Image (cartoon, rainbow, N blue to C red):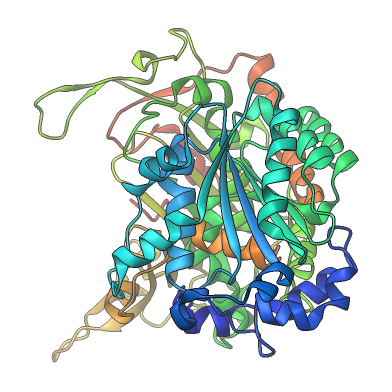
Amino acid sequence: MWSLGKQNCQSSKRNLSKTWAEASSGDFVSTSETKNQETLNVGFGDSNGSFRNDLASTNGLINETEKELSPSLSITILGATGELARQKIFPALFALFYSGCLPKKFQIFGYSRDHISDEDLQALITENLTCRIDHRENCSDKMSSFLERVSYEPGGYDICDGLIMLDKRMKTFEGNGIANRIFYLSEAHDEIHGVANCVAANAQSKSGFTRLIFEKPFGYDRGSSETITKALLSRLSEGQIYRIDDLLGKELIENLTVLRFSNLIFEPLWNRTFIRNIQVIYSEDWGVQNKGRYFDKHGILRDIVQSHILQTIALLAMEPPVSLEGEDIRNEKVKVLRSMRKLTLDDVVLGQYKASISKDEKFKVAGYLDEPNVSPNSLTPTFVAAALYIDNGRWDGVPFLIKAGKGLIKHKVEIRIQFRHVPGNLYRERFGFNIDLATNELVLRVQPDEAILLKVNNKVPGLGLQLDSSELNLLYKDMYDTEIPDSYERLILDVIVGDTHLFMRSDELAATWEILTPLLDDIEKYKIAPELYIFGGRGPVGAYYLGAKHGVRWSDD
């Protein structure tokens, strides 16, 4: 298992100095990087690619000449005082720093319109910084060292003017060495285009790479997504754009390709000959909470299905890539997405949670229409079940059933692969009237309690011949004595080293909207009313009829 310990940063990611050299073939890195390879090895990684944090050097001192000429990494968080930055981004960066996964010379710049000082920002983020359970040595010292590298640049009403000032401050830190920059746009979605333009015009590095991280939603439909993409690509190259999806940084999602392509027992079975159906389930036992305005505009299809679920299916169903390089993997993912049938109303069930009573029966739970900032007549779905098909040689005829919703009975994110029945099963009569109980099933549980489960048929010990379906259980928390890193840690580290395979390329993004936009248009055109379901229940009854229509029994029930 890959974790963010110092040794694992060295061994699990590509050789970092090699990454900078290879990146020079793209549009986003200056050729000066390859000419200064020896300097890069001093700053970001040594000749064998290991990271060298200045905390490990004698008294933390860096020779002034080396400091002036060594390559640097500046990470700017736009929207630094927001909830996402405070709860996810800064803690992830601290975890990477603590584990020795950041280069020797780096600085984090917070940027927002709030007029606060460096110390104010440091105090704001401190409450969410924690050290790993499995290595807490010198926690307070490392936290202090990290905070010293966090500074703040207040922005005014004109973002471009603010970034000009930030650029000057970054240049002071960077010195004369190769300057690499990452901008995390933790901003309101309607401001992203303008912010990206200002970054491109006023704050790009002249000697190293410049990379921008974007949070979803990546548009509202096919047309809006194309408009945003064209605008971004008019000022930035594809290699500079990182569309982040936190679900794709989960341990089990990262393990999908490992499970498929490094285990002989799975890859030969990974096709329509042996697999009966695949189910991707994303259920939450909470409502929209304080995000009513955002969710009422986007709904479950745009919020969860467009990126989370379609990207998961693409990784699960893709053909073997020619290598583990990011572009080779993204090439295969986009082929899968382009092979998917467009969704229609006939193969979709929409739902919306209504008011209920809490599990302890002590208070009433609000329905969706009672949530703050939600229109009282809203038809926005909080639940979707759908049947997807991939029209290619590997998956022809295999239903991919997806189910995603809020306010359901339990929080669960998992992938279930159900295999076909054994032809001429000699023990058929021993399973009773429901042969489905004898189905072999591979379960990849992403949340909670990461696990890989394999359901097999087994004889119950004894003199008789009684059969039982048992689970072979690989529970991560029992098997591995380490803390699983947060998905933002993995994804931010991928951006730093230039690993793109978990980020959507523009053609992938377009392919996802090609699948969803006809359905979204019909929902809007015909004013489709979602089926109501009780908060804390199993979702709309229509989901079960949909499963039966496609010959599938929802196995999570």
